[in-house]
Amino acid sequence: MLLLSQLSHLPTPYHQRPAVLTVGVFDGLHLAHQHILNKIISLSQPYEKGISVVYTFKTHPLKILRPEIAPPLLLPNIEKISLFRDMGIDVVINAGFTKKLSQTDPREFVENHLIKYLNIKEIVVGHDHAFGKGSAGNVQLLKELGKARGFRVREIPPLQYKKHTISSSLIRDLIGDGKVSIAGKLLTRPYHISGLVVSGRQVGRKIGFPTANIKSANELIPGNGVYAVQIQYRKKLYPAIMNIGVRPTFSGQTRSLEAHLLDFNENIYGKRLRVFFIDKIRDEKRFESIPELVCQIQKDSHKARKILEIS
Image 1 (cartoon, rainbow, N blue to C red):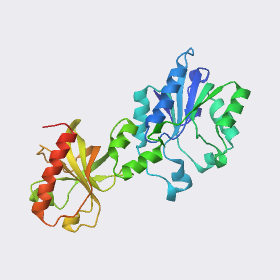
Image 2 (spheres, rainbow, N blue to C red):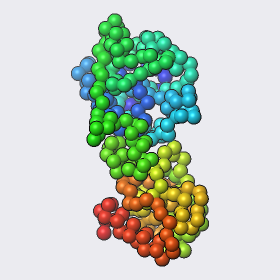
Image 3 (cartoon, rainbow, N blue to C red):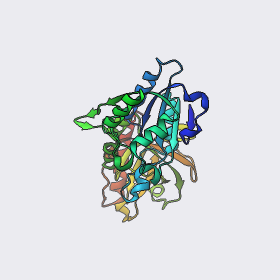
Image 4 (cartoon, rainbow, N blue to C red):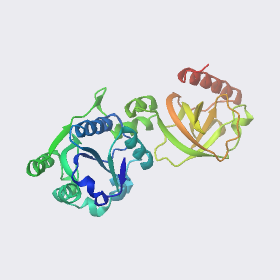
């Protein structure tokens, strides 16, 4: 896969190769995104030396234009690029979004940012695609430009999940509500976060359930509760339960992420872990006594083993 920060860096030999293009943020690379990407790959193959091209952005445009309402990203940019590579995309333009770009006339964007460097044969976009100044660019405008400049525009209809249109916004809402199992289905992989194991109060160790306190830089953390998770450490997956919340039994006030790895007894302070959320076990709650909490953790561990299919 050829990865560039702007189309002007595209090597000259690529300029005349037939290109099938899509443009978008593609946060999460969920089922609907994958449908579009698979489409450009399949459409590019019949052309002699055809290439599939993705024009995407390193961050969400709203982080530049309206940071106060910008949504938390489902996927760090580096992981999004890795997934493009895994899918078999030929060229990815991973551009930086700027206020200047947001003020570009839609026609000018197509002419000077796309057609100028690419031999576009087809453009594939979602049904709600919008671009350019004031989001004035849409599918209809693309079709008009396509007729004039000799490329075809294909509009992909929305994919549905139980009468809901699959979108990054829907998946963010599901994760925020703790519905990580459904979110995983729409992403086609478990939602995950990464973080460092940091020192905690070691309360878990005192009651027989040592936990790894994880400090994560991910923008979106699932809602409070107890989850069955898989934790990747040194390229190996370990079953675990994770509590997200304020630890009300211990009168906590600060939200924390604590994982108890099942059948695991290594010192992992300072190590980086990746946490894959498989399913939610229960909501967070306050217990009246430590023995009551210990009994519940035992039940949570048993349920997690069933969810994760281990004995």
